[in-house]
Amino acid sequence: MSERFFAENLAVGSRARLTGDEARHLAAVMRAKVGDEITLLDGSGAEFTGRIVAISKSSVDLNVVQRRELSRELPFELTLAVALPRGERQKWLVEKATELGVTKLVPLETERGVAVAKDSSLARLHRQVIEASKQCGRNRLMEIGQPLPALAYFSAIGSDRLRLLADPAGQSLGQLAPQSQAGVHVAVGPEGGFTSAEVAAAQAAGWTLVSLGPRILRVETAAVALAACVALHHG
Image 1 (cartoon, rainbow, N blue to C red):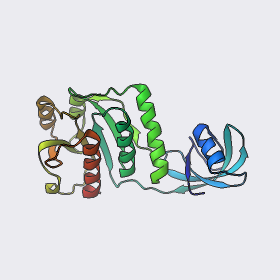
Image 2 (image 1 turned 90 degrees about the vertical axis):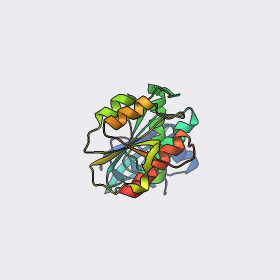
Image 3 (image 1 turned 90 degrees about the horizontal axis):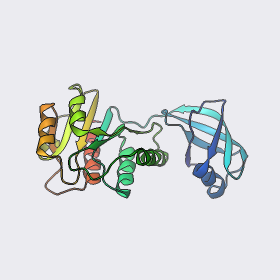
Image 4 (image 1 turned 180 degrees about the vertical axis):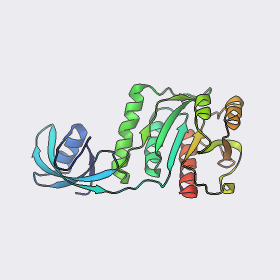
């Protein structure tokens, strides 16, 4: 069976249990049987083989029989700080950021922001990370950080990181030479963009302004475009 399933704290020789949607999909959709082997991940960076030993209406029990060290991560840490859009667009953004290899997503609180990242919504986004990771082959989960005010975030990131802020007045990404910093942080504002005060604060903290072209992009489009460009340019 080629599909991947998520369970926490996996270890060879231990027992794993799938419940909820994971168990229903495996038992009812995949029509798994006792003795079948499936691929498991727990977000720690490795991939596991689990052998089914019991199937019930609400759960599937497995023995974890193999661990494989298999990384599909970028060769550097990529943090995406973004003023989240509303509704389903958040899920799309998280899905694509996961597929692109973003290490961490930080919801930014900005003056023109339209969405508030509550604990319940953060939990839903974490679940979206799991689903996207299962699909794209990542074995380490993208982290969903706690929301931070934009000004505090800009000043908190040290100069040992490449720091890029999306702004129409910035330079082209193509003009940036690949760098060997320990990581890259990129920031994308809300639909109305960062305010002049927020941009000034970022520049004062050493952030570089970069342009994504002459067209007006939605938040999620800009975030995914910038993450993809950085992954290709610096990875």
